[in-house]
Length: 275
Image (cartoon, rainbow, N blue to C red; front, side):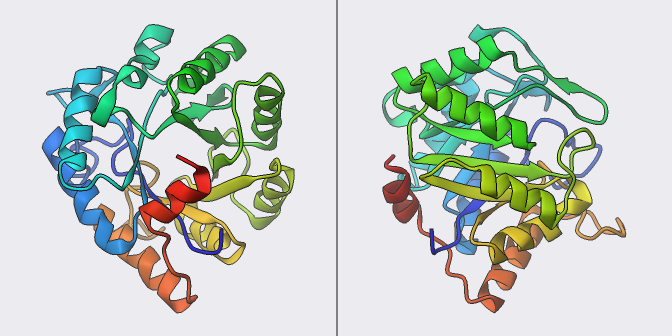
């Protein structure tokens, strides 16, 4: 895609108010930041829900509240809901958000393509679980947001395509810099991009200090960016300033302007991904 896809990840599951006061956790905070992010050219929002205590939740009623709050104001922006396996392993819980219907149905659902270890926690994604989630998305006309932390995960996406569980055009988030996966350098990024199946659209994210350099590598290599406090709570590697989501988005928008990259609108991304 010639224009820049900016995929906003405002909160994730790990950052807490104790770690950074800037992470949005309540539905109202998430809705507000999602809507305000549009000024920076965001076309896609990758959402995680939290309960009243700020802890991650799979409950579709909370996701419904967030989706409704966004779509009451903006019906175009693309909404992706997380099916993460970090905190729960049951298919029924991980897939509950995919059951939302009508105006509350998500456009996309996250699909991590293998198990992996983070620095303090595992994300377990068995072949059966991945295929069941992919099938539920297929049956509900929800596009998978394919999360690849290593080259092998891209190969597994090709396997899912052969089995008829995912269909092109594919959207990949390539996430580098996790301690047990592909490290954040341009060689690994190039290898992953080279392995993508035909008819793929891709964005690049980086974990922690890797966020900004990997975003820039993606921007200069023809990809989009995944950006937000989910992956990185600091504004610089010196870690003297906690970032707000708007600090991160504004910096990316300024870099895009310097590179003469125009952000894609939600409708343009919808057309390319055939949502």
